[in-house]
Image (cartoon, rainbow, N blue to C red; front, side, top):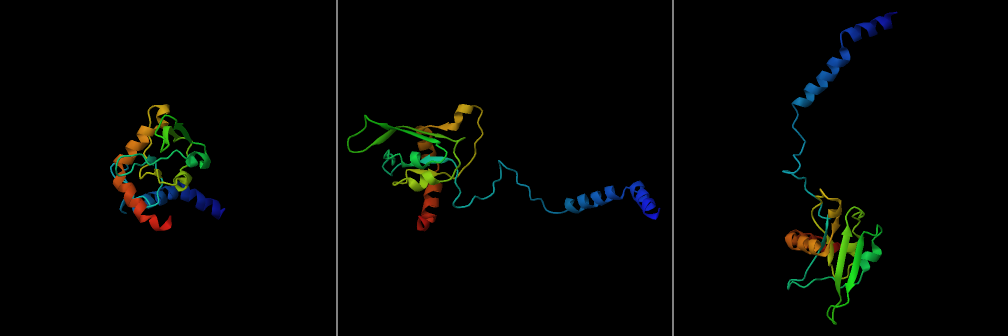
Length: 164
């Protein structure tokens, strides 16, 4: 009978409610740890693997030699390459270089397989698309990413060079 009376008194005094309010009050005066995402970003690891990038040489020539090793090693089969048969006789080039970003698992095997470091993982991973077909990155988009993120990519590759 005594235990039942204690429970009744505790429920009438709303003890659980006051305990919850005490926890809330304690957390109100602690510093915020929330990050306002698009304006503020957490720092990424130097080995972060983001959206793919095709690189060019300093002279503007494409690095990709159409060896198709990245397509062969991709476990998700997210890369599709067609060789340009009309290209120069001394160097093979790609006519089509597509990556399906929804299939990609961002493992980085394509980057490791490339003998000339033509494809690397970029420093960003912002993928918000209004159109489902925007998930396919074509060759010109990949090359444009390489040009716009060149400084960040070069810095990351230089920092990671001793591990390659």
